Image 1 (spheres, rainbow, N blue to C red):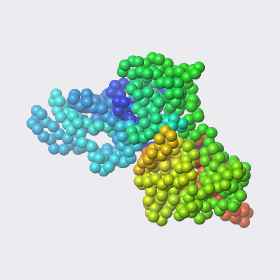
Image 2 (image 1 turned 135 degrees about the vertical axis):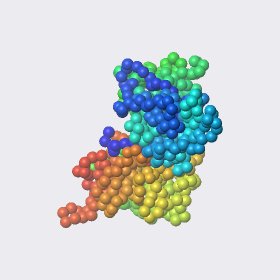
Image 3 (image 1 turned 60 degrees about the vertical axis):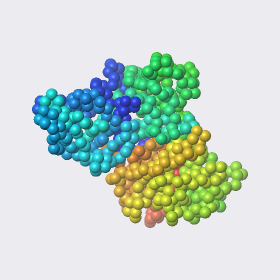
Image 4 (image 1 turned 90 degrees about the horizontal axis):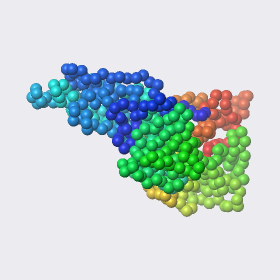
Length: 595
């Protein structure tokens, strides 16, 4: 892989009983096999137990320390700091991750000496939170950063009677033991996989956690499809020395209905894409109530199964397309040729173009920004048509896997979002994007996410993401309100954004006229553990990025003439050396991948 290093970000895993669970005791799975049954490589932490005569604040501090127990992520010791009743009922759902915790302080006690109760408060700094599913929720509010712990005496010793309903762990501990991965579900049509980022524990809980996450199903409110049957459980996923994972799914009744052959194909694809993130797994087997899931001729499935459902859309063109002296060009960076379609003639004064995923059709915006043209890439005899003729400042359009075209008009009164339906543009209201000053936007190839760069003021831009809900027949049902995924540390203007993977972006920020910083962002907004900032010394105009990690991400820059070198454009490989630059004709004004 030649891509930029992944930015590790603050987030967490699901901790509910139906999803990714925090075990009460011991590791999830113990075996002599190699493969996924390995530790996370970090130092083992064996926290202290409650001591005789511990004060309330010492009990709370011990409780916080005990939630760091490893190598298996477990709450066994933490429960010893709770009352008997709280120990039996405490089911933490989610995780709060903090930078530091101020010394716990005891509030006023109440009651008699024999039945004394009190409360201890602990204040967290720079805390972030996930919901019970593990979805990134961003920073904890200042009010919620102070956490209360109800205390009671039990057998003469202080214990916590009212623990918080989530786990509390330090950022450094979390960053050493968790990694970002994705759960893969299908779009409503069952055509393409949609990744949902989660953070899961490294080591022997990794594969088990991923499978349990799939069994929980898509996030409530989304229209994604899950082909793992409802009502099933998975307790562990052992991996043999040869890299074969064994997924045993069970039901309460012991006779769950087996999926149809079509459903089995999609279920295996979900599992393959999810499990291939574990480098120790090469293949897997699946049983449901001890009955093997089968596809024609096989009961053991390669983790590369289901390539045709790739979220970056298998079969998408790998070529670059752009404009050279007003004519559309396409091909490899070393061999750009004028296309044979209408936009290759130079008769349409265009400032930007965007080819669909198969590079069969192209949308172009006029130099004035008022007209959106559609035409075939190659000469087919089809005359270009203009679904928008009264735009004010049309941005570069975007395509998804259905062939649906998206556009944003940057009007003086605020942005208007629209998409193409039967040769006509249909406007859609997107809270947080519509009416804002939108500088740039992207739509994911799987059609699930709309990303936009919002100009906040002259010095600051932000990035927001909205989820696109569609029906099984490809109709847009709703576009949900956008939420901010900007890194609080990523201040300044944004020149361009592009896809880096199906779940991450590349961000171009200007520092000066000829110095830029390239960073990354996760589509779930997770930030804070390991930021990435690559300096690029050039007059960078844009970034050519793609969600397919087999393709190179380029910076596109323009250079003025000097005494020795004439004016020219240049592509720079972000993952390569500074010398890995491709000189282009100076008449080239833009280049981008399809989509």
